[in-house]
Amino acid sequence: MSGRFSVTYLVRSDAAGIEARARGIAVEQSVEMPVEAIDDAAVLSDIVGVVEAIEPAGEGVFAVRIGLALDTVGTDAGQLTNMLFGNTSLQDDVVLHDVDLPPLFGGPSKGLAALRSRLGVTGRAFTGSALKPQGLPLERLALLAERFALGGLDFIKDDHGLADQHYSRAAKRIPAVAEAVARAIRVTGHPTRYIPSLSGDLDAMRAQLLLARDCGLDCAMLAPMIAGFSTLQTLAGEFPDFVLFAHPALGGAARISPDLLIGKLFPAFGAGGAIFPNYGGRFGYSTDTCHRLAENARAADSLPVPAGGMTLARTTEILDFYGPDTMLLIGGNLLMARERITEEAAQFAQAVADHPYGQRG
Image 1 (tube, rainbow, N blue to C red):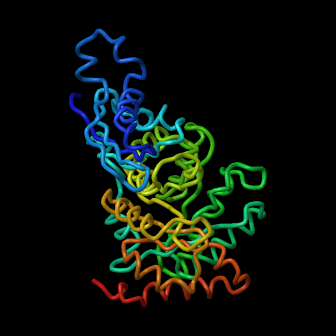
Image 2 (image 1 turned 120 degrees about the vertical axis):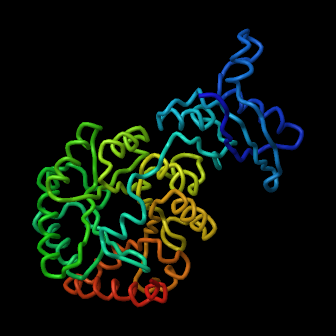
Image 3 (image 1 turned 180 degrees about the vertical axis):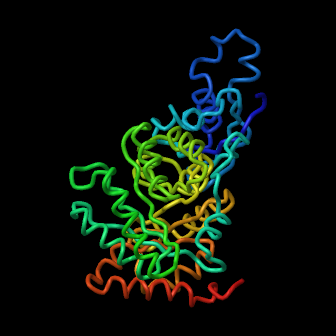
């Protein structure tokens, strides 16, 4: 596949040195060797990265746009990430800021319209909560899920820390929680979705998805920065009936703009839902970052899921900010209700339904 795609980096430099620094990044992210040592004309013309633009982006920072060869990527999400930021991520003066994604990665197989159809939700935001804390006996975890579902929430997800620990074996947890949610559905009539957390290597995650499917589930979650982009891409391709939610764990360990990493790359590799830290919570994302991230996710037909320190008192504010094509994921604040958790979940669901966005359609 011939041609190039553009990648933008934010680079700390003085004006005198930025052109040389930009050329260095172009070489590092393409052939990573002295260009003078290359004697193949096709490599020089088609493979070596080219500097397309350099623009000021604040005091001591420049936006550098590099054109990289499509031929160096193939069709693998991991290799794309390698070409975007593999070696340069080791140089602390550079942030991977944006990319015009090549048309090789089709995004989630099931997008926003499919989620709305499955749950019968129109014109309002989705609601969700998380099963915490890890370490609970399986019976209590399942009961917690049932009580959330009785409150009418749309989604109930595993805490991302739930893996395959002795107190939370996936082979037992997934069926137990799925059945607990199914019991609640028989009472409420609302098709609440349980989102089990996948863990382990590719084979283990594949087996967990097969089990989830056998339990009647059609959603799951993994952390792409831990599992690997190629794993996300592979599972999204093998299980097109599932909506895969991407958890941002380890997403802060790399100098990649969150609105690109979580809002654009995760969905491009197959995530139908992108979970991210909301502004004003305990993780410090700005409103501008959250807005761009949510817009990027929606543009890729992926559901933005603000989370992290969310509270019921902020429901109206958050819906005003994000609009209806969003899932509000409130975990710890709902869990504070203890014995009243079903009532609190119902109040949360009602607050989302009563918001002005909830009157659309």
